[in-house]
Length: 206
Ligand SMILES: O=P(O)(O)OC[C@H]1O[C@H](OP(=O)(O)OP(=O)(O)O)[C@H](O)[C@@H]1O
Ligand SMILES: O=c1cc[nH]c(=O)[nH]1
Ligand SMILES: [Mg+2]
Figure (cartoon, protein in one colour):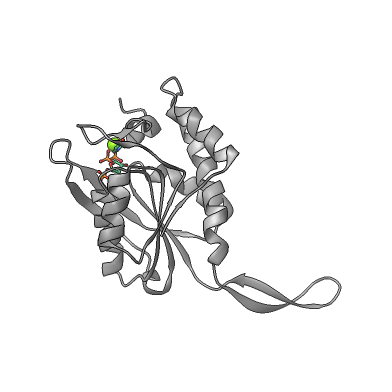
């Protein structure tokens, strides 16, 4: 299932990010904020468990999160989405998947993976600002599934129709969330209109 968020705050912040005049600091800040806004909606289905506590006044049956939440950024650019989610879910654990896309072939190349021990039963959010051909996301979902995870969501900011179709075909059980479904990929595999190279804009490496 694909969900594209239609919210004025997300549209406003994404426009700031798309603007080529926006520098690293504001790019990162808006990415943080959009990540938080998206995750607030995405996590409506987070399971809760009942807990007995005492308020200063009386006994109370309350609710706490029933599952571990694991954020899985696809390095490097995915790191830019972690902070905004952790602000809302400070107990979330963070796995890391290192992956770069070959500039010529556009094939994904994994170079690092590290997971917490709770992956099998966790509520997993794979995060990356960009879903272009879908190769990196598909490879990351494959890797997370090899850890035994079943409850996986893919959270990206900007997606291309080609990438969405590829992920839906490879992993029909994984819900995809976007802030914007853009128009197409150009001949170099960049999303149009997009926001350029997200990793470079987050880390100032251009
Ligand atoms: O859908 P795809 O065609 O696979 O492209 C998307 C991937 O490309 C970018 O990463 P990049 O390879 O630039 O690595 P970086 O984050 O280190 O810059 C982006 O952050 C995604 O991970
Ligand atoms: O448009 C794109 C496509 C892949 N990776 C990016 O950072 N931007
Ligand atoms: Mg990059």
